[in-house]
Amino acid sequence: MARIVITGAEGHLGNTLCRRLLETDHSICALVFDESSPALEDLSLEQARADVTDPSTLDGPFASADIVVHLAAVISTVGDPDGYMQRVNVEGTRNVVQACQKHGVKRLIHMSSIHVFKQQPSDSPLDESRAYIGDNAPAYDRTKRAAEEEVFCGIESGLDAVILNPSGILGPNDFGPSIMGKKLIAYHGKPFPALSDAGFDWVDVRDVAEAIVSAMERGRSGERYLLSGRFYSMIEMAQIVQATSGAGEKIRIIPTWVIRLYVRALPLMGRLFGVEPQFTAEGLHALLQGNRYVSHAKAARELGFYPRPLDETIVDAYACFQRRGMLGLDRV
Image (cartoon, rainbow, N blue to C red; front, side, top):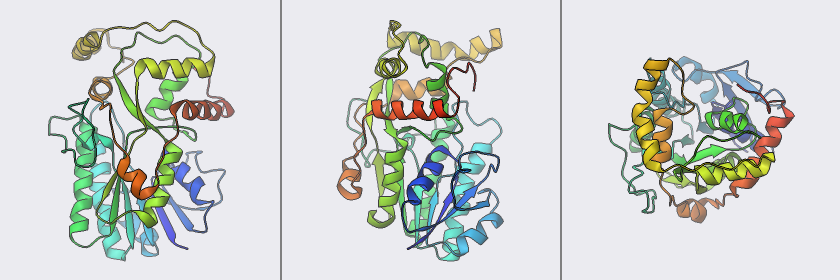
């Protein structure tokens, strides 16, 4: 039995991992930043408040940890105007690495992202050997790349660490809700805007949590593992949402080049009309650049990672939103 400390435990992936670990004999310490979150209120486990930007809050929990799972991060599709994402994602990861080294933590599982990799060419298979993104990438992508580099620095100095790179995460237990969770709620039983065949690779949050549990014992130190599901176009995603919610409106299709023009016009539209668009430029950039062939072969081979189909994920996500009375709301 190991003592496992989880940063960002109140997040979508964090609370899902806690639920999975409660099925094991491991001792769990859930580190939370937002103590008002309802994500863990139905779970019987140890909790402690921690802020990864403040190293002093990590000392107590890390001193008795065998394994640290570092999930705390800021996700943004509107850049990093105040530098907070940089402080949490990069400096926070540096603090976690140093705290692991200071207290002799046996293994660190670091949750990175598919966004650290160049997505283009999008029709060529993407695996762990793909090059890093450049400095012109969106702010979130750059901070996750820099965070990964902090972990590799720790590995070079002797830290036992495994890096996991999930694609877009969806599924139940989305208490936030997440950016995509808000989209699912907003379009439940309602018409979609015009869509194109641009899209992204999506994976179930429960399958990512299962991969974390597997990586604790089976992951090779110093290695990273892509945790992908399958690429779904915006049209395919809408069709699954419609089938799940019972909506039957015809989906309007527009060419991808129109979306590219729209992305370029977003800053001007915001200044002229003073309204927040349904999609941000960075969010659309991810859809337009998303690789269609993300390989999780390494994770399947070494971690036993086999993701479920997206329709099951969306059905279960909506069931969770329904239980919490979140469907039918115009804004969340």
